[in-house]
Image (cartoon, rainbow, N blue to C red; front, top):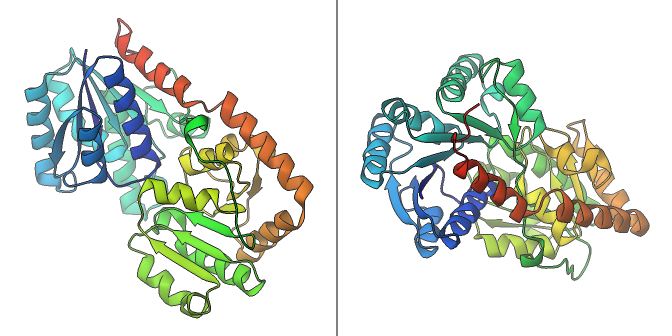
Length: 361
């Protein structure tokens, strides 16, 4: 079987991690795999190392991306094409219309358009509807996004709502091993989705209370956050790593006492699943699929308020209550092992590719 995986943003992150896990799984099963991704990216290098053919494309050039993707797919001649994320799905549509016999799938890793200004919201909704109605099947990583797709009519009215949770390989992740004073960690790109301004405000309050904080990740918001936290960084109470590779991010997670996730929106964030598997309790905004990842609060702390004082207070309370922390860790590990197994996620995708109807709704 010849399968193409398409992910526009090849930087380290949850979506990229899932795509690369899928590439590795398919190659191991004997499939011929082509990975189409951003030129010069982490995903391109890693995909090549995993044994996939790699097409490096200018995904952030609207005028060329669709044409270059079509040329790459025509050269590879896949039987299945799977796009991950809105940009990849959007650029796949023109090619799929010319190749209706090829099974085309689209995984939504969170709907971003709903949090934009009105013109961008309307454009984003149009783009998602165009993609969701013209590719053969749409997969969501959480029930929240599936319901959102139905309410915004992003998929055909009669379409079945298919959800495949992201997954983690519990055995391949490091065990939590915090050293020194209990430390809070934020892991994610410093972009509007992750609300770096709120992350910085939380970090300042925790640092003032004697809780050291590490912010792991780069992005457009990094210089602004560094300026806001200059005094705390100089005093050694807050550390910022900038963009790091996956191994360093996992090491930072394993060395922390609590993960803080103040995102404005999410799909099903892989970093939360990794924290469950590693054994690090989570304090997170109750957005997107995060409540599903934390079993409605049974495996972590969920906050509806976007209040830095409340976030900081919940982190401090959790650090002060060892019994509660142990209960959350135990619940989280069980959840990761039962509901979010990477092997189950990958097999569901492989089964989708092998179905005779190509996964048609």
